[in-house]
Each structure stands twice: as structure tokens, then as C-alpha cells.
Length: 198
Image (cartoon, rainbow, N blue to C red; front, top):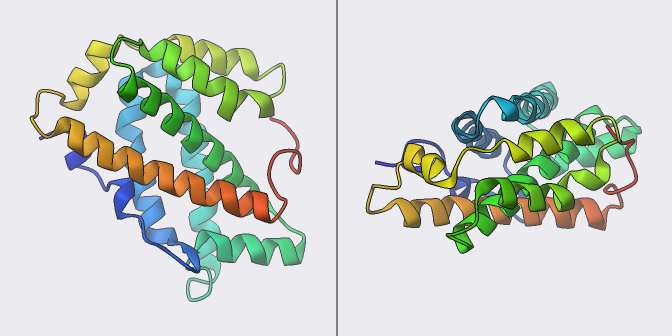
């Protein structure tokens, strides 16, 4: 059994016309912890950032669980209130998820590419443009400190005959969640330059 068979896959995240279900989304995000642990201590800053932003989402949803059932519901509420702590946290979480989705898709599609290349290229697109010149070197160093590809996939359980199918399902689910969030933030004009850079 591979790692992706032991955690809640992103393909289990419920997405309806109302938006992305908070509970299943946060549960799937918990499954990222093991992946980030395998990527090594250099990714501790990424893991910490993701966990902090998941906590912001959960805290906001807990304020009114009957109303804030989707990610989009509390973002819209914060826009109306002109207060954005959870919305900003979700925006940075979206960017981190986009980093992982792009990097692992590159890695999956290019079996000879080392993870440091996959994550380095993904960082340029997903997070780099939104980081200040002080933060960028920290994250760039983390991207370059990825483990060897073979070691990473071995730890995830690539010896399992269903590994590729499980990873593909997890990855497609993650990509769908990211695409939904990207479209929502773009449609509401709350991405890119709205928030200050870190």
C-alpha cells in the first residue's frame, strides 16, 4: 500500500455549485504533511506555511459552521466585511497547493527529471512572483534541497503495483481543487496584487 492509499485523497474533496467543501478540503490538506516530510527539513517552512493557513480556514469556518460550509462562502463574507484574514490565508494556501500540483505533475510526466528541477520550475510560477526578495532565497533554497527522485518515490511506496494510479488520482484531485480556487479568486478580482507580498 502506498502513501496515497493511506491518506484522504484530493479526489475525495467535495466540489459543488456552491464551492469547495471545507471539511473534505482540510482533511485532504492534512495528507500533504507526509509528502512534505519526505521532501525533507528544507520544506519545513512550506509545511509550516500550509498548516498555518489551513488553521486560518478551519478557524473561520468554525465561526459559523452552518453558513461557512464552503471555502467560497467565507471568502465572500470577508469581502463584504472588508476583513480578509482567512481569505488571505486561503490565497497563500492556494498558491502552495499550486506549487505542489505543478511540481508533482512535472515529475510524474517526466520520469528522468529530478525533483529539484520540478519544484524549482514550479516555484517560479506558483510562489516566486508573490514573494519578496527577502523570502525568495529561503524558498528557492528549499526547492533545490529536494531529495533524489528515486528516494522520494520509494518512500511514498512506488513498489506498490497501484502506486501510479493512486498518485494520478490524488494529483488530478489536487489539480481540480487548485483550478477551482484559481478561477474563483480570479473571477472575484482577489488574486495576484490584492495582498501584499510576503
